Structures are given as structure tokens and as C-alpha cells.
Image (cartoon, rainbow, N blue to C red):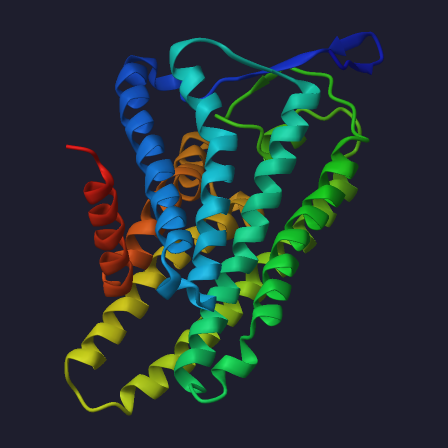
Length: 315
């Protein structure tokens, strides 16, 4: 096990305290969050299977949706299993494991920030420039945007974790959170974390406000186009879809902005954990629902898939 030494004290592992102050609810939380986690994984896996198996869904929008679902599965799986363990027993994690968890989770969350912006931009082009859309969103362009989103996440958080790895941790060894988040870890550092904190703040501002700004701009342009459509079912559907997308996106970006750009706005560690639950547990569950609930193409593809599986089942 990797050791981080400081002066006359050595830390070999951290203990994630999770929701230790409401221990009487741990069993209930374990059941509830297990159901949510399984539903999240199954829901996102179902989207991936349906899109991959349906030729009619091989379009840019669903290509991006598959990548979003894959991101959701990976990054919620980085955090939730350890949180569930903490409801049943002490959740210990090595220093190296802690930094690795933050790196993987942070990279995937950052990649999702960019992926959501790519998806909003895709809808903007499809609705505002329908004739030029096939050229603007060709296969190479889609692949390039997805690669940028994924690689940007790992590059940004790779830099942050590299700086965190230079810090010395002298204890206490208890992290008052359900996963290895940035601010709780900084509170345990003995060496000066100011450079790491400033770098993280700058990167957070760029990686959160820029994609969120692009999303708001894209949906604003979409709304302008929709308003030109005569009032009717199509117009109501467009407004309903855009509002539901923006609601989930706002929850995701809003909580991240509060926690990483303005952490001083939260004066309770319990409230900080509740905010963290919104982007680690709630949005991964809502995204597959929001992006497919009113989508007739996905519904038809799912029914066809289930029908084929049913007919292939021997009597």
C-alpha cells in the first residue's frame, strides 16, 4: 500500500465517513440508493443496446446519447458502490485509491460537461440549419467532437490530480464525505494547497461556464426558431422537451458550480453531500428518462427489439 509520509506521521489510508451523522437511516439509504444505482445502470445500458441494435437510430443525436449513457454508467459506478459500502461498514480507501477515484470520477464528470454541450449544439444545428445539418454533423465531425469531450475531461483532471499528488497529507485520516472529493481532501493537506486550489478553481470556471453558456445559447436559438412555428402540438412538444432538458442540465451544472466555484456558499457539510448526490446519483438516473421519455423513435426501436427477442424465444 502506498504511503504518504509527513514529518513524524504516516497516513496509509483514508476513511470515508459518508452520512455518519444520520446512522439510523443507513439501512434505508442502502436500499434506496441500491435501487437507484441499479435503475441507472439498467436504464443507460438499455439505451446503449437499443441504439446500437437499431439501424434507424444510427444518427449523430443517438451517437452522442450513447456516449452520454456510457459516461453516466462509468462515473456513477466510480462513486456509488463505495458509498453503499459505507452504509454497511467502515469504508476505508488507500491514499492512492482515493486519488484514483477522484481522477476517474472528475475526468468523467468533466467529459460529461462537454458532452452535454455537444448534444445541445447538435440539436441547435439540426433545428436551425436542417439543410446543412448532414454536412455539418458528418461521421468524422461527430467522432471528433466526442473525442474532444472525452480527452478534455482526462487532461483537465489529470493536471489537477498531478498537483494533488504533490501534497502531503497529515490527517486526520477521516474524510467527511461519501467519496474522495476535492475540497475535503484539501482540508487534510499539510503542505500549502493554494496552487492546487487556484488551478482547480480556474479550470472549474472554464470547464463549467463555457459549456453551460454554449448550452444556454443553443437552446435560446432553438426557442427563437420554435416561436416562429404556428402554435400547435409540435410547438408544445418542442417547449416541453427543451424545458425538461434544461432542468436536468441546470441541476448538473448548478450543483457543480456551487461546489467547485463557490464552495463558501455552502456552510454545512451535510448540505454539501446532498448537493453532491444531485450530480452523482440523481442526474445519471434522470438523463435516460428525460432524453427518451417523449422520444417515439426510441420507443419504437425498443418495441421492435423486444418483439424480435420474444419471437426468437423457443416455445
